[in-house]
View 1 (cartoon, rainbow, N blue to C red):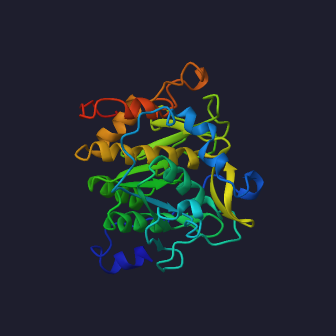
View 2 (cartoon, rainbow, N blue to C red):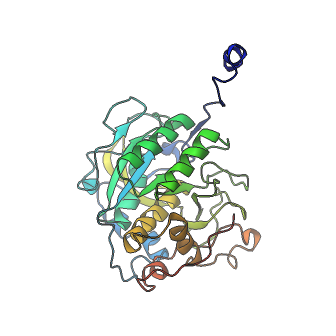
View 3 (cartoon, helix red, strand yellow):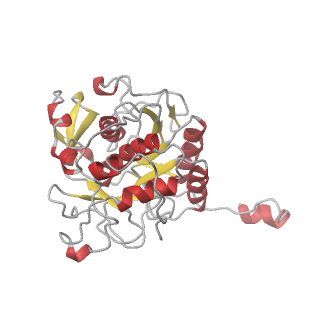
Length: 330
């Protein structure tokens, strides 16, 4: 079709590409969920918050006044743990303003799980749900690019992208760069293919690419890695968070770099509150520089897990004045 149009007038189409497919990297949730019931203690008291030293940090910021967009499968609008956290979102799958989870498919509950992690770390931030994934957890580059534009227009400060594919899309790359140019941080999951091959949009240079580790700091068996494109690691195995599924609203354990990305999105929101005038690159640099190196624990992947494990205590207990550091080179 594009060739036919350009034959008639070569100036009509500047460029065109496939609308690349992508989605959640975790697979079918019913194979990996560990239902935790409707009691929140396993969520708020889980090991992962200790592992990133959130519980031992002197927290002076809570994300107040900040908006974190969760571009995903939607978010359960009725989950009790998320009440008061959610803004009116948008559904780009059904093209309406109700960004609720749609039941029945492999992606059911994914966005809700991600949102719960962010809500616990940045407890006073508002979450802006934008649905781009169908019930099977599938989406495309056009929907994600449109979601980025809409989220920025709604005032998002941080965007969480716990999704992706191995296809490099010019449309998505330019949308990510435009988002960064608006001083909005973009955090993305590195993917679950046990591969060093780039996973997009995480591999785009302005994005904070997050891989995953287990409770011992060992790279998760499924997690992608790469010295050229991964920036930081976070807990990704057996993470308990908010969920919606066949049992209704509750809590469940889920594993994947999607969960790891959510920890970093929460951290970026707190950093944005502390340093409102910092560039996105400077915020990302602080997360990278203050991470705890994982090279000794992971000699096979030395240099391929970014700066190391997200360290909230190191991140939040440095002086409140911003000290410039050279930007990441990748």
